[in-house]
Figure 1 (cartoon, rainbow, N blue to C red):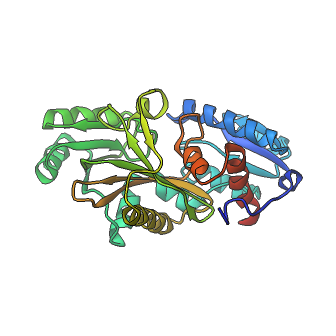
Figure 2: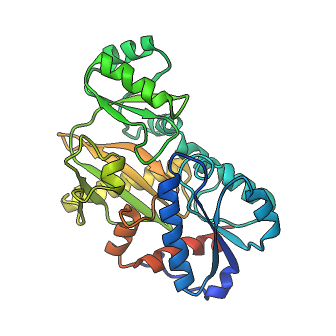
Length: 314
């Protein structure tokens, strides 16, 4: 836990902290819950924190409110994609998490995969879908089953597993309602893991289990039958391999502060990187707080540790 809580800054050292949540993305409901939890924890820690539900009046709030630093809990586009980070940098307000380039890159699943591939990091084969013909070509090239994803959404929004060309075409059309760019990936059969990083350290991986077809929105935020394994069920060597892969994947994207990577393991034991989230969920179902608890940090210590990097790194 060396680097995780070593800052020990007095609450007043943070100044007046704006917790940014809500926004207009498809992940707004999750962000509202995350923001409420973070705000409550910061206030309980003695930090002078207040909340801003980011809407059309945000620029006026930015000018009128005294803000010494911002805790970003905006999930999805408009908050996790570099745009909010760029705005805060322009007005000179320190903020939590990754900077502009890493935020924008991680939000783009296609570009993230291309970076990983260029470095020899394993990620499932994929294709970009923009037409019915693209769907037919992807089916021929990749085979079935496949998973369809909007390229710039999180929380499994717009995702679907498909087993035929007709299902693929339908899923592409549905995903296109969320994003102009749609990916399709090879389906990796095997256990799923999620691995959080905090202040340069990789937290204990979590093994995920769900009776759903995959770890979808309902399994993430609503269901009570999702299984979370900590320890994750891997032997020591494999767990270290998973942690090392996550560290390399996050370094390749340029992650700072905190993040969470999602990884699959196939029947041969090989790990496959799916994506990395630069503003992970902080709800009662969320995974980073679970991993932090396994590393010895309660929720309040976790949010203060995340906020501490906004002081140290800017």
